[in-house]
Length: 93
Image 1 (tube, helix red, strand yellow):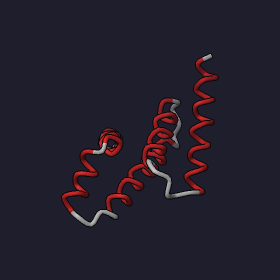
Image 2 (tube, helix red, strand yellow):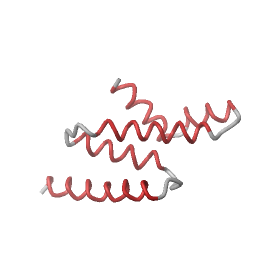
Image 3 (cartoon, helix red, strand yellow):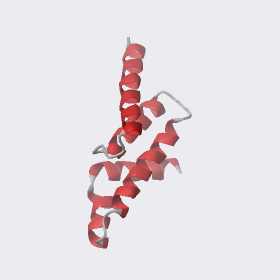
């Protein structure tokens, strides 16, 4: 039963990834990538890290759009999803 739930969660997450590929300006892009990474990681998929890197890239792209250095630092350090990405990147490197 749990395996069926895991498969369903992965299918829903993959649909979100497909939508991101179509519309790059979706809010919370990095959160969708991070969620997909976590699902794949939990299932032991070797492709999980690719989605963590996409989450980190989306975060950096958004940060680069912030011209004020203090606001950029606040965005990177205080936004919850960005904290989670940084923690995962630190734990996986």
